[in-house]
Length: 56
Ligand SMILES: [Zn+2]
Image (tube, rainbow, N blue to C red; front, side, top):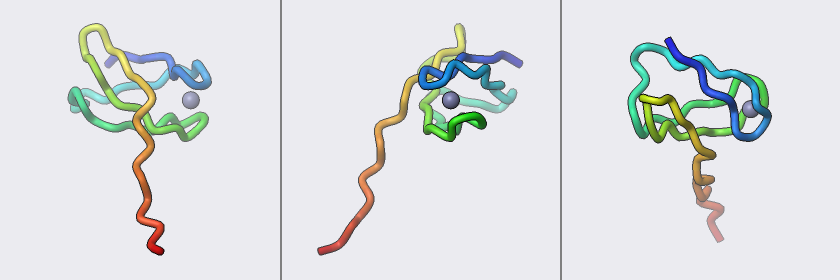
């Protein structure tokens, strides 16, 4: 198991063994959405905020 530092709050986030590239994980510390961009080395980046459908 590897850990990656949260780019937002620098908390160490554990990547579970089943984590795949492109997966969205949530920082347990600050709650930000992170996209796994690489597994070797383990790297994450802030996930683009999904646009909510606000309606009109
Ligand atoms: Zn964080």
